[in-house]
Length: 54
Image (cartoon, rainbow, N blue to C red; front, side, top):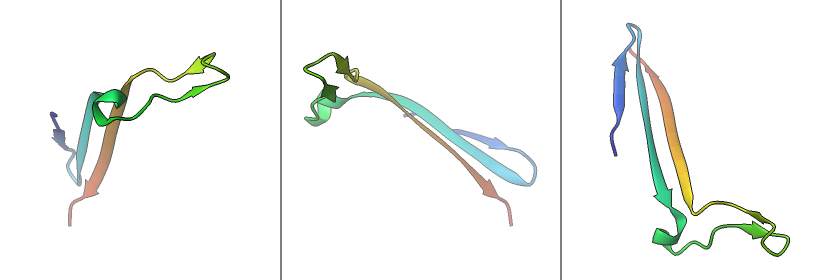
C-alpha cells in the first residue's frame, strides 16, 4: 500500500487508498432482501489525516 505525505508548511498531510476483496478475509459481502441489494466484493479503503507540526 502506498502512502502519500505532503508538507503543507504548518502541517503534514497523509493519505492512502487501496482496494481489498472481502472474500480474501473470509468475509461474506453484505446482502439484503434475498440478494436484491448487495455490496460488491471489492471495497475501497481510504485514509486521510493531518498532523499539525509542533
